[in-house]
Amino acid sequence: MTAYYEHPVGGRYQVISKIGQGGFGETYLAEDTYLHGKKCVIKKFIYTSNDTQDLAKAKELFKREAKVLARLGKHSQIPQLLASFEEDNDFYLVQEWIDGETLSSELKRKGKLNEEEIKQFLQEILELLQYVHNNRVIHRDIKPDNIMRRRQDDKLVLIDFGCVKQFITANRQLNQPHNPTRIGTEGYAPNEQLSGNTQFSSDIYSVGMTSVFALTAIQPKDLQRNYNTNELLWQDKALDVSYNLVRIVNKMIEENSHYRYLTIQDILTDLSSSTTSQTIPVNSPTLIPDYPRSTIKPTWNIPLKPSLIILVPIFILVGFAAGFSLVKNQTIPVSQPPSESPGADSPSLRSEDFLKAPNAPSQPETKPEPVPENSSEPSGQFLCPDSLKGKIPSCS
Image 1: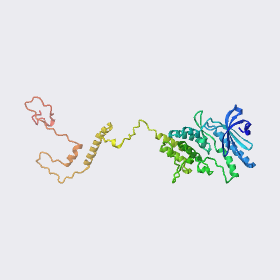
Image 2: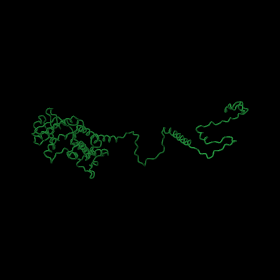
Image 3: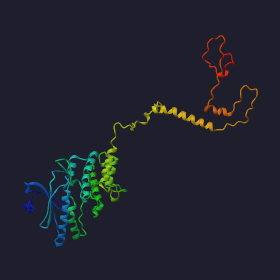
Image 4: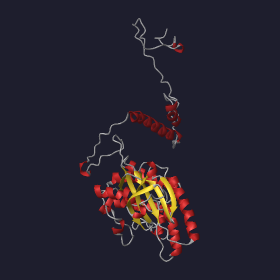
C-alpha cells in the first residue's frame, strides 16, 4: 500500500492492494471501515483536464453514469454500486467485491469448453446481457476478464462496465482529437465500436468472440480469417461442435453489423431450437433405423388393417354400380327387330326386356307339377290357383 492511501479514500475505504490498471485508471481492493472491514472494489478514474468547464461537464456525466450502474446493480449477477464520489479532481466508484474467478482464469485451469458447456454459458450470459440491454445500457467491454464465476453459487457475474468510462473518453477526445481513447478490447470489440459507433449488437459480437476463446483457448486476434470471405477460422481448433452451434456463433461475430444478430432474444430462440432439435424421443413411431442399404430386403407380407378389409367390398360394389349405370344409360342398337310369328309358342325377346330385367326382375312363372292320380295327399310343393280349379285334374 502506497503512502498516498495511508488514509481511507473518501474518508471511509481503506485500500489493501492494487488489482488492476488500464487506460482509464486503477482498480483497488479495499475494506469498508464503516462496515467492520467488509471488502469492496474501488475504481479510480484519472481526469487530466484543468479546464473548469470541462471538469464541470465531467462531473455531471460521471454522476449520470453512476446512477446507471446503481440501477443495474439491483441484479444479483451485477456488482452493486456502494458509493460514488469525486476527490482531488479524480473520480471514484465503490462496488461490491465478488469472491470468484474470472472466465480467463477458469479456462486456463480447466481447458476448452465442449458444446454442452458453451451452450450453458451462452444461455446464462445472454440472459444477463438481455437485462442490461433492456435498461438501455451497452456494456462495451465484454471479454473473459470481465466475466466472473462467483464461488458462492457458481453463477456468472458481469463486471467492469464501460459506460462510466465515457465521460473520460469524451474529455480526451476534446483535448486530443487526433489520438482518441477507445473503449473496448482488441479482438473482442467490433469495428463499428472501435470507430466510435457502438451499438447493442456490439455486445453480441463481444460475447461471440468470448465464446470462440472458450471453445478454442486461443485469443480471437490470433486466429486466421478466410482470405475470400473474411470469416474467422475457429471450428477446427475447437472440440466437436455441431453445425447449429457454428452457425449461431458465426452470426454473432459477423464483421458487418447488418448481418449480425440484432437482439439477444433472437440468439436465445436459436439456441433453444438447436437444443430441442437434437433431442429425439425414445419411442418415436416416425423413426426409421439407418440400416445399410444392402441389408434391406423387400417383403410382400403386408398385413391389411381391419379398416381396409371392410372398405374393399364397398369399393367393389361401388365399381359394379358405376359400371352398371353406364350400361343402363347406353342405347343398344338393333339393326332389324325380329318379326312376331303368329304360331310361335312364346313372344320374341326385345332389347327392352334385357334392360328391364336387372331393375325389375319378373317373377318366373311356375308350372304346376301333376300329382299322380293314385296319390291321396297333395305333394305340398304346388298350390293350385283359383283360375285353374276345375280345368286340370290336379285341381279340384
